[in-house]
Image (tube, rainbow, N blue to C red; front, side, top):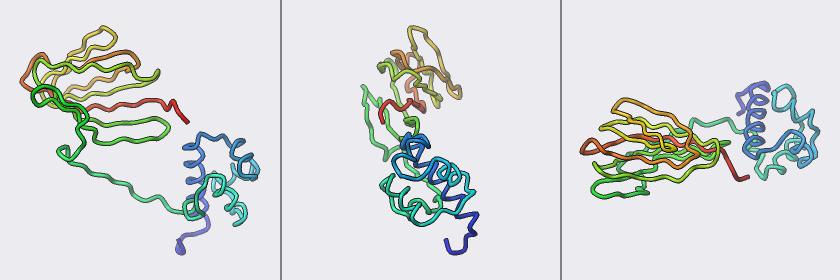
Length: 192
């Protein structure tokens, strides 16, 4: 970080502070109370418009239980790559039925990316997710039949569907030898 200007350091610090605060579901008031740093100072730090003292930074770091390095570190490019064959299979159906969890993110929302394979004649039933949950399915091969709150939707290869997933729903293959689809699940965080 020696080559960075004060403005760049302050911007990085502000971004990291905001990220930690949001991830911890803290308001500026709550963080001020927890850290002993005024709400106004915290707001200025988040905007990158002030150069706080080391003492102030230590109070903030202690409030989050992180090091000063965590507060000051520049974000790294975060890339993860996985082969579908290497992904953990969390559901197996008759024949070659499979649901592989490819990635999961635990942010303000919980986000999961799945690769599903459902042989002809097989149905998978899913319980309702928390209120506000959404799913997006992109059919790669075959024809997916979705039943959502009693309503049936047919999703062919190269078609996508987005729906509220806070009621029971099911995925079925009634039409082809194999149906493959990618499923994105987004759930609002229901725990602290």
